Length: 342
Image (cartoon, rainbow, N blue to C red; front, top):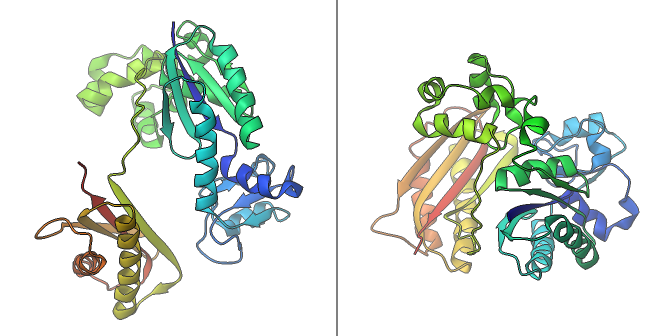
């Protein structure tokens, strides 16, 4: 029978930090920004299970995190370390000879004709731990959706199998928002239709859903609620279609000359990274977040065509910036390079 496995690393970013600082094991650890919770406008990238017990969550301001858990150890983010650790994990996973689809640093799907998925999952967990010192959870299902949700039940460091047959009993009474792919906005719309649980969504009439959500999503939502999902494993390396950089300032910027200078610097840094990766830039997008929290984005196609010249890219970014009315304090600047794809 064809099975899908979802490998989900446990508190991955924190685990990488604890691996190189074993004395932190078992303590509340928070990773984010520069690691200094006294600095403004920095957010949590990851929190250990011990910190989460105090209500610390990803995306939370560090200042809030330190109020909730003052005894936590705060560490700066180190993206290169997490990329290297992820490469180690995926190298171990690929040794099992099962098709692998990588999803970011800390997730992957495996799939194929697997005789004993529980045995494979158990062996895989042990191999990742032995080879990297990092713990993972593995969910098993007949498709990606089932496997993804199964991994939630297995957290942390466990294995859980969720099948089509078991789906109604396990998921039927749960909120529809528990389904993979249903966010808060969609959940609110479902609530407005009187649909609160997975079972209610599975039984909902397609006409009502299509009228509210459109033909694609409206037809797909009941399929999700019945445990349906994608079964295809894409083994080809993922190719980025864009790359971006942004920075949130500790103090709002009000001087247009300073705003231009900071965007110019950010754009040149991004362009150099793109060129070093052997890519060409076709479009530039600029994001400006004004105080207190109003965000606008503008985009422009590069002319006469794609470029690998940081100066050309930075000049185009400043041209886009001129489309904004810089009449309010600026909290954040971001720039995105949209890349050519062969």
